[in-house]
Image 1 (spheres, each protein chain N blue to C red):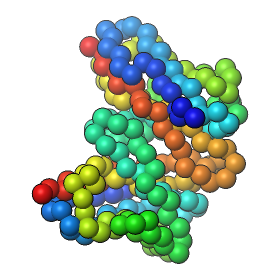
Image 2: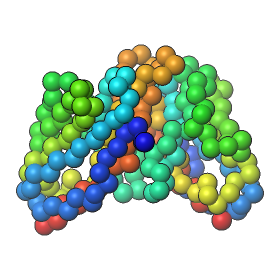
Image 3: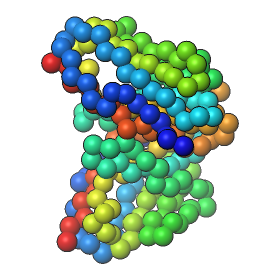
Image 4: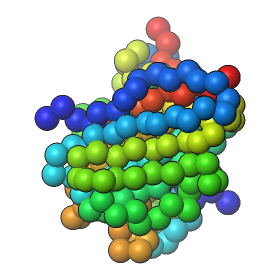
Length: 112
Length: 114
C-alpha cells in the first residue's frame, strides 16, 4: 500500500464550481501536512500547509483528521487558472529527520 | 534568493552514457532531496542529505545511481550507465533542517535516454 494515496482524477468542473480533493496516509507517526500545486511541465510549489484545526487561504480550505489519517482540500469558486495537479504531502519522521512523501496527485481541469 | 537551481534543464543521451545532474540548494537550507517523477510512479524520493551527509538512499533504484553532496551549496546525481527506463524528470528540493517545514523544488531536469 502506498504511503500517501489520492484519487488521480481528473476532476473536470465548470468555472465557479466547488471541488474537493481527498488524501489518506498510512503512517500514523506523520507530523505535518501540505498541499502542493504542480502545473504542466513545472515543479511542485507549496499551495498551503494543513493544520490540525483546519485553515483557510482565500478560496482554499484545508482540513486534517488525524484519527482517520485523512486530509482534504476544498476549492471554492473555481477559476480557469486553478487547472493543475494537486499533490498531497506528508512529513513523516524517520531517522531523526522529517521526510516529505508525495501522493500521486489529483488532476483538476476547470473549463469555461 | 534565486531558489533551488538545477542543471541542465533538459538532457538527451544515448543508452550506456554517463549522466550527471546538478543542484544548488537555497542558501541556508540544510536538507536536500532528490526525487524522480514519472507518469507511472509519480514523485519518488531517491535520496536525501542532512548537512551534506547522505541519510537514506534506499530509494535509489540500483547501483547505477549515485549521489554526492561535497558542500552545502552543491549536489550531484549520477547515472552510469544510463538506460531508457531512467527517462524521467529529476527534481532537487531543499528545506530548512530545523522544524517540520515545506520543501522548495528546483525546476527539474528532464532526462531522455534513447
